[in-house]
Image 1 (cartoon, each protein chain N blue to C red):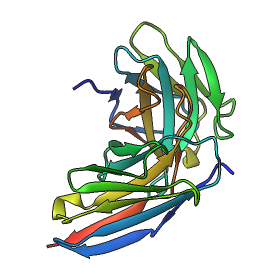
Image 2: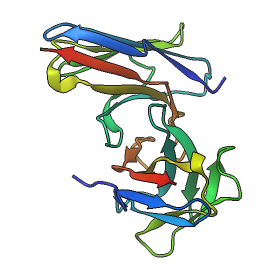
Image 3: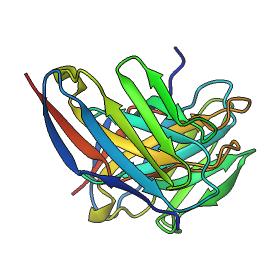
Image 4: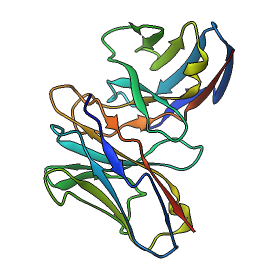
Length: 113
Length: 114
């Protein structure tokens, strides 16, 4: 029940294309869903996050879509750029401070020029 | 922008030795964490720390591991009697209050046990 399932494991997209990464969770105690971007040898960096009171959140080229009834959420990277090539982790956590993040398995995105 | 800083960035140690990984969390944060990432795998929770005590720990965090906040700024992870399988990237993280539970990660300490 603590797992967050993420797909696909890897993704290749052409420059300018759309990258879509999907995540699903089971634990209804989760009510904050961040996405982290990680470059090789670096720590995960918070990219964008959403709470379940909204169905979509957009920041620049990054959009999270959230389906509370299905317990699924996804990250869309519009107009993908080579600099977006990284590993993306979805995560879930209860909103209250001090709880731990549960990460998905990660998606390695490669944007070809 | 405030950040979590970690030292060392890379450490190589002999199997059976003790290592201490150090972290300086973001200054006004109250919750501190250690996570681990074995090469090519997902990030795994090890331990959380609040008010000078462990608030939660995972099954990975056994008696081999300990955490400490020796002063007002540092947060350390000690790994005793290291094993080959302890080789991983260790991330320190911190979060505050009043902003929900946004957790910020350091750049990591890469531990290689030989």
